[in-house]
Length: 320
Image 1 (cartoon, rainbow, N blue to C red):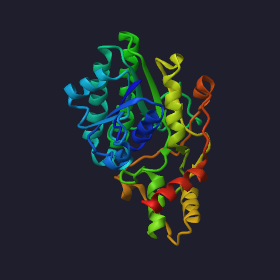
Image 2 (cartoon, rainbow, N blue to C red):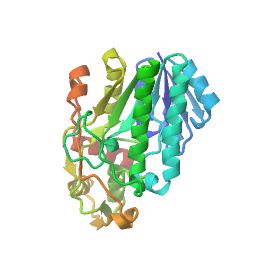
Image 3 (cartoon, one colour):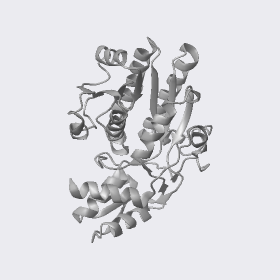
Image 4 (cartoon, one colour):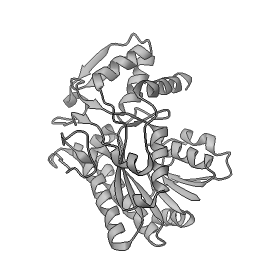
């Protein structure tokens, strides 16, 4: 197989590229390095089956050529991270919507399989936990830019499924729930690498809000295996799947666990959302997936819990 990964120098994209190469695929990557890093794929350059282009997917001729070369497309390129979303809403909306449109249009010419990376953010402020793929979206006001990311990814899903229904393009939509592991940066607000780096450096561990909000964290290796399992199952085409871990932990407890595991003397401090982001910022109190659908279809089962994931992330940062 020849696989194209948009955003392939990013955190998840680089792990996916690594696994595909291990499976014998030819891997093509396009990334503009706006949030990805060349360091993430440096170790892959020695493989003759690995090819990369430093460019934006908005460059339609380049993207179309890469899509044409490949059998399937993993569309991972997107504006990510709460901090980036709040600070650059125009970039968030344009990258997510226009980029996806370009990829789908190119793939449709020869009906290439497209795996669309979406997000748990599309569930918005819903409180019916755990989230099932069929649940309604509950988003905040358009005056609050925090919800622009969720809305843009929801449009990506609508557009992808429209291509499937109207044009018979094979697509699979996956909703990620807080994927974590080595190579992830805290630069754009990702909580696990932020906490770990703060703890190792002896800085204050900054918890936004009161820390009672909870999340479920999934090891990137489990996510990659879930993605590849879906690709190999034709019943997944035209459908939406959560990929995550069923266990939850509060952000306050996460901070305490990171401090303990790093044997850090850092203080845990609480920062109001208005100070961290913008006035009127809203967060989801809980975010946990129902993973029964993907489990029943391909036997997906997360292998690592939060403690095992943190061990890998801590080791990565200490060795970096």
